[in-house]
Image 1: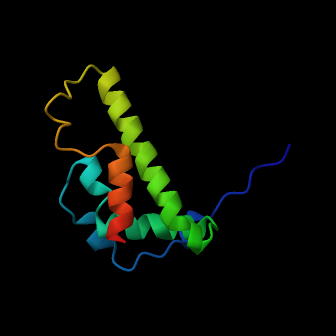
Image 2: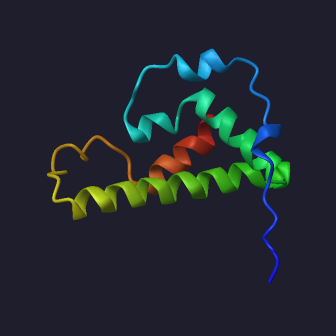
Length: 102
């Protein structure tokens, strides 16, 4: 059994690393709305050889799954999400919002 092909992360070129590192820390839902985050995620997916016309849909699905997973983990950790989640979109709403902003 051979190794699975893997993209070479060293090929990803980031124009301004400081821009990525010097950012305000925000909540996980808000993070997915940040232009810098979307830009980096798109670059990574392109390097992984996903087609450019697939990336928007794929990011929407990835972000939605990420939000669902984080919320699930918070619930399992017995975090009180009542009130905290009222203003936050559902994963589907967050994904749709991301599509609208593009």
